[in-house]
View 1: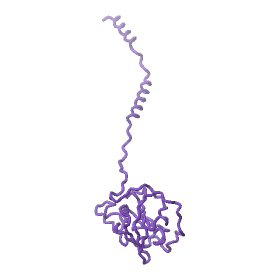
View 2: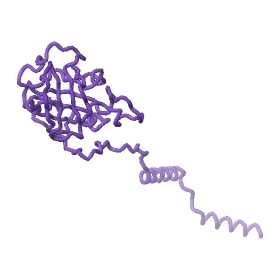
View 3: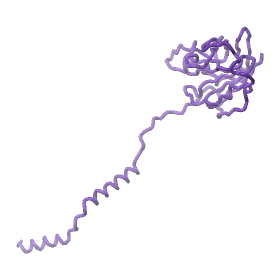
View 4: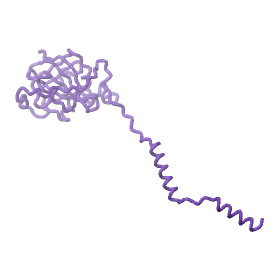
Length: 233
């Protein structure tokens, strides 16, 4: 092949070859593609699959909505001075609830964690039995008193729980007795309701003659389960 022919062919190739594009164009185009693909195909990181808490599986449990009780119901008298002469941790009386396997269980004054760790804790300012709403709080899951065996190593089981673990199994007419200053007061269970933790109206006299409160669902403090009782003798 002579030199003229080679030169002709090279000139033809130059004429047919497209001029190169600016490299910046390719970079920008690649970035746009990456952003678009990332937006379409992004999958959030896995969130731990924490199941929603469920109440006890007891067949007697009735799931109720949050109840807002009457906040306008006032105290009948100087509530803070109704039971006088008590110090934090003093035993106020003794509670017996056969359905909850509570027998002559001490009720202590105050609702600090140190008191709740020992059993039912009386709200400061609560009425005395027979004089208004005798109100107390108690654990459900935390092992307390005679329920500290924990044979399975798990809290919330039949021998490893708090005094109010099974308040959701109470039925209307179930009996509770309180021994207070030499007298025995008998109560019948009325109902269980679920309220917000901030709802203190359930402690007022007009709603109940005796009240148990505990965290709800068991193991969670998002709500309160409230057991209300009527004094019968």
